[in-house]
Image (tube, rainbow, N blue to C red; front, side):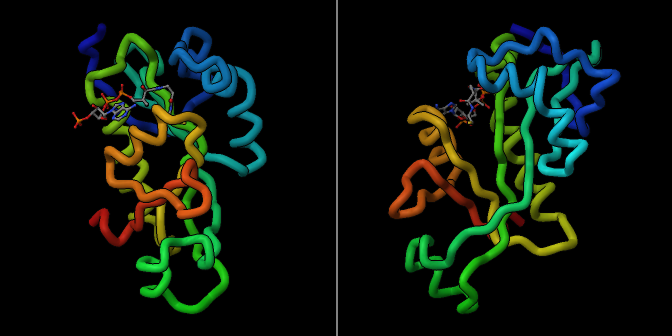
Length: 164
Ligand SMILES: CC(C)(COP(=O)(O)OP(=O)(O)OC[C@H]1O[C@@H](n2cnc3c(N)ncnc32)[C@H](O)[C@@H]1OP(=O)(O)O)[C@@H](O)C(=O)NCCC(=O)NCCS
């Protein structure tokens, strides 16, 4: 357990220690250690970390541009939108909290930070979306109000108009 205060900031690969991050998900830990800086450099993802005072990473998430097919949305959501084939979205590609910091509200706080960051962007996007890798993740996002696509229950979205 840790009671360290956090600041959510863009990942600084030179300053933040990524080597000891352990969320319990090997792919998410490996991504932070080995892949994320390349994705940032290529502008295919942005990464934000909850940093402790000791420059340790307590949690992280990534954001990237995405789109949703109007035909894939629940009809109640689609009928409120213009008849374009797609609407723009922000994809939260990854979200993970270090095991020492779990169960203290940090995952929810990182999700809220991502929603506000996406809602504040000057280029309008319709929703924050996620591709949940497993049932526990689906349950986490549903708990926070995300809605699943009818034909793809592991893809969930939350309209950003509801965030303000
Ligand atoms: C999922 C994860 C990010 C949650 O982080 P956390 O800091 O432990 O979660 P929090 O303490 O912020 O929980 C916030 C809320 O979500 C709820 N919650 C947490 N995990 C949940 C789950 N699997 N199902 C349903 N609700 C869940 C908590 O009960 C809490 O509810 P409350 O705000 O009403 O009290 C973390 O467990 C993790 O890193 N898991 C491994 C990676 C992973 O599965 N990532 C998911 C995205 S792919």
